[in-house]
Length: 252
Image (cartoon, rainbow, N blue to C red; front, side):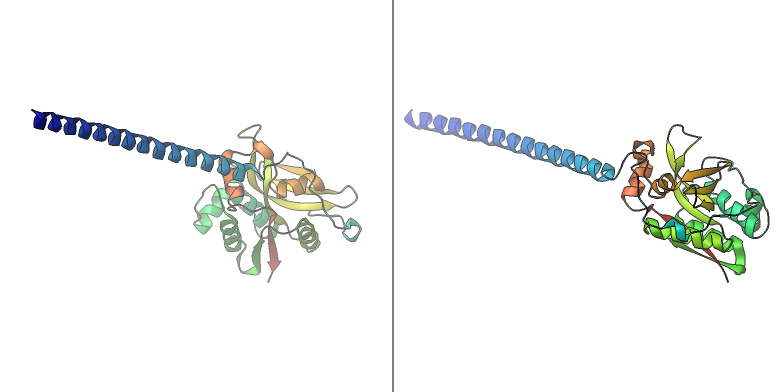
């Protein structure tokens, strides 16, 4: 009898330990899950802060240090303005405008067929440089500069226009296909007016923009706040697209 009672007591004790261990295991699983959720949300918060910490207002008054008295007003005359066929062809349309000014006037479709180009959106600076080099031919060479100072941007523009050479750039501009959003966009600088402190830009959306130096430099620095699409903001924050991207064309 006593032996039976002792066995039953040991069985109850064993069941108690098993229950406590099960509770501990369940509590351990919940703790790991909670920890994972906490880490996940911390990661999301830091990612958002990282991505948007560089976003500023549309016109945060980026400055320039150049003495504009040393520049001269220069405008490329008879520069043909072409209009891109869709939202994603600003790059090849800008190249077509440059080629029309320096070489021969082709349509975008004719250039694509002539040089067997792939018509794609989201052209990188390297893609743009390589296609421009191919199309302009042996008489010209193209180099790309990225993330340079505002002063260097203006110096290069002044120098290139003084040689009668257009200046392709990457910047942000209002996107007529997605109003009121802005877009990372390629265009061609064709003039600088030192008296009015403006820059003249041939925009492949089909028009010429006269931008104050402040607005132009803001756009070159890719500053458009929350007016940029989310994925383009990510590309900027990750350094895939860099501010103050400018393409210099030199005669060989």
